[in-house]
Length: 304
Image 1 (spheres, rainbow, N blue to C red):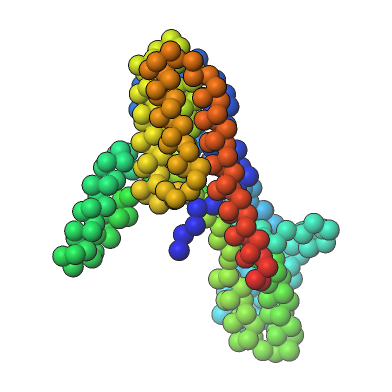
Image 2: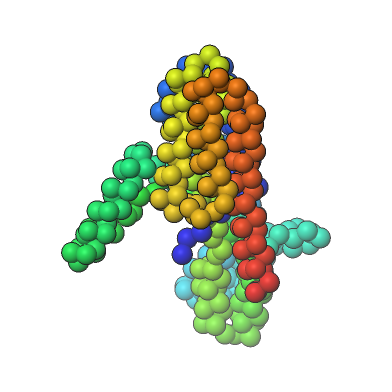
C-alpha cells in the first residue's frame, strides 16, 4: 500500500506559499491561484531533489562491469573492477556519519485531477457501479485517474548490504568460485531502497487560496469568497481522494473555520483573526500528517 510521505522539505513546501505575500496574485481568479500554487510546488520539488551521490553511481558502474567480465570468464578483470567499486565508497564508509542510503536516481511525476470534489464523487460512484457489473478493468482505469499529487521517488543504494556484497563477491573469486561471485553481484545490482514522497496537490492549492483570500478580503470581498469556496472544495477533494481522513479532528475544524471565515467576510468583514486562526490550523494539519509519518518511520526502524 502506498503511503503519503511528507518530509521536512515537503512540509515546508506546504506552508511556504502561505507565508509569503505576492501582490501579483491579488488579481488572479481562484483557478489561476490554484494553477500557480501547483506550478510553484512542482518547481520547488524539482529544485530540492535529493542530490545524487556520484561515488555510488561510479561504484555501480564498476560492479556492473565486474558482472559483465565474469560472464566473459575474465576473472582477473572482474576482481579489479570489484576493487574499484569498493574504492569509490572508501571515503563514504570511512566517515563517522556514514549514511544508510546513497541516492542514485530521482524521479518526479505529476498526476493532477483537475475536477472538483463533485467530479471525484461522481467518478467514485461510477467505479462502484462498474464493479457491481463485474467490469473490474474499467473500474481500475477510472480509479487510476483519481490522483492529484506530485510524486518524488528517490532510489538509493543501501550501505548496510551493498559493500558487504562486493567483499563477498571478491572473496568468492579469490576462492575460485566465480559462479557464486556472479550470483552475489546480481543480487547486489538488483537490491535498492526506494522512497516515495507524495505531495497532495489539493492541500497545496487550499493553502494558497486561503492565503490569497486573506490578502484581498478587504478590497475584493467577492473574489476572496470564491477563493475560500475553492479552498473548501480542495479540502473535500483531498479527503475523497484518500489523502486525508474525514475523521481527522483538524480536518473537521478546518472546514468549520473556512465556513466561519466566509460568514465574516460576507458580513462586517473583520476576518483578520479568523484568517490567522485558519492559518494556524492549516499548520497544525500539516504537522499532524508529518508526525504520523515520523511515527511510521520510527516503527519501521525499530522492526529492522
